[in-house]
Length: 210
Image (cartoon, rainbow, N blue to C red; front, side, top):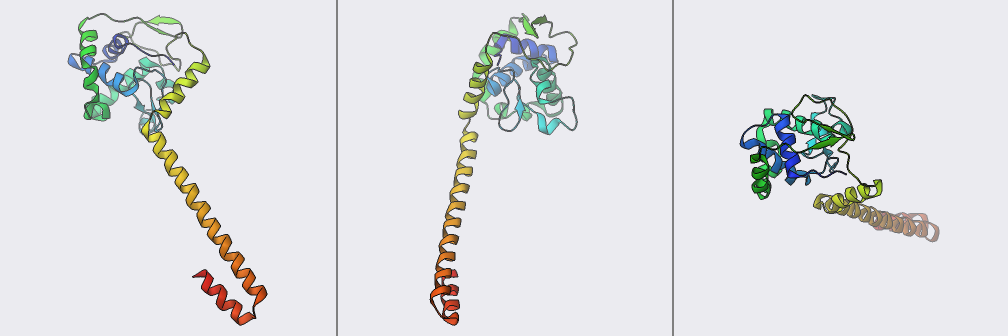
């Protein structure tokens, strides 16, 4: 998994179409959303640096597949398209103020006016030029095992992941309790039927079932 610097994030933002102070805000939002990770996918299916919610936008933008959005240039352009329609309200890290933590760094990177080098598919690209959609991510050294560990770390540090685990665990426990009780009722009823006259057995079994 590639991790973009703030300079690269604001360069992508500038290339996607943001201008003025929104370039720095875009960089700060991306850092808050994903820590600049290019191919991260959260439990909802939000993808890439700007965590574009693929499932929500798939109908209007069928080309926005998960793999397509892992390309950081594509991700930036998709995010800019969403921003044009929704403004910054589409990102929770903006509405809850989490992005402000990174604004000083983002303003400095954007204010330098320097476009950081970005490499995709082993080739340097110009994020300010028209881009060609692709499914490849930024090319950086790293093994598949390390990428998998990074993905796992992203999941286990997400509180929503543990909430879902808790719900599943509670559901399993409740099912086991219900099955145990049902099994006990059936055994008592069977003993009553075998040991008592028919009329009394029915009465005992009905009491057990209550």
